[in-house]
Amino acid sequence: MYMNNILKSTFAFYNLAHHTEVVAVLPEFDRSIGSFDAEQFPYVIEQGERATEAQLPYIRRLLAAA
Image (cartoon, rainbow, N blue to C red; front, side, top):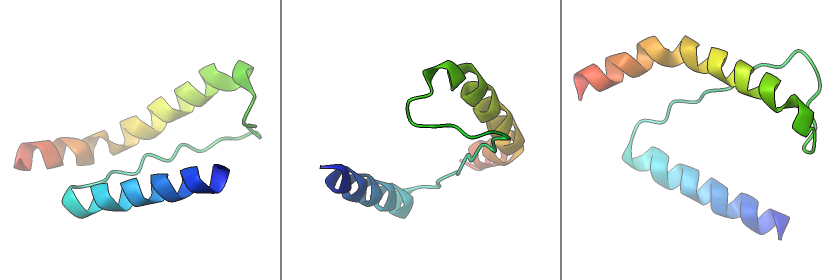
């Protein structure tokens, strides 16, 4: 079941990437985050916001060109 979900998500990504610009937002963590560490959600969200803010100039250029 798990592998099937990975295959579906990989297919969906490549299908999307073929038709549009994909901006990878990859937050960096200074600690280990497990799959079930729900108490780490605020930290994960904060790091995601920081990573997104770093990509905003590029995203704005893409939107301006559209």
